[in-house]
Length: 65
Image 1 (cartoon, one colour):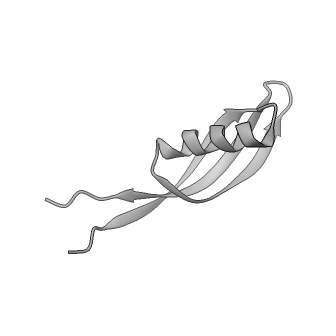
Image 2 (cartoon, one colour):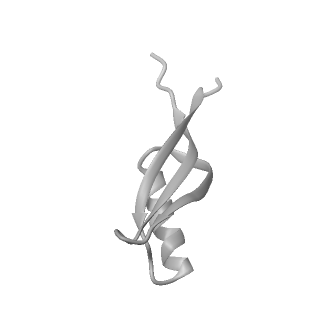
């Protein structure tokens, strides 16, 4: 049996990290809360709040009864 999935477009904010490696981990953790990321991009930087806006497409498993 095939497990059905759907995709969702989400936007999250993450704090700017001191290194690229830490930033990648922070983004991955933020996106994992919503599903499995297919792709993501940094779409805005807020210098005042020191945050990045991330837009992503994630897959979410659909529970079929």
